[in-house]
Length: 107
Image (cartoon, rainbow, N blue to C red):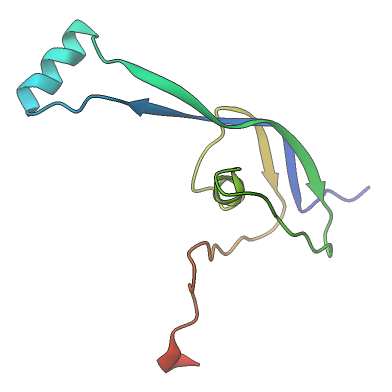
């Protein structure tokens, strides 16, 4: 049985959101020592699982903020998952930004 090209197994990704910014390096170091950093954990993806076989075409659709770009960044190994496993069998070229690769002088 051939391995899938892309495999997500119970993948979750959490972001840490810091609400207060330190005004100086000194304040940052003091907050680290006192461990007074307050952050909120924001779950960008929760327990995502799917497989894409070699030769298949896949579309990722969803509303704004639903995690489409985050999912693609996991596929491109830009991010590492907080939990679960991402397996890629082959090479990945990332064109994530709008208009990436479409330079008008180079067409």
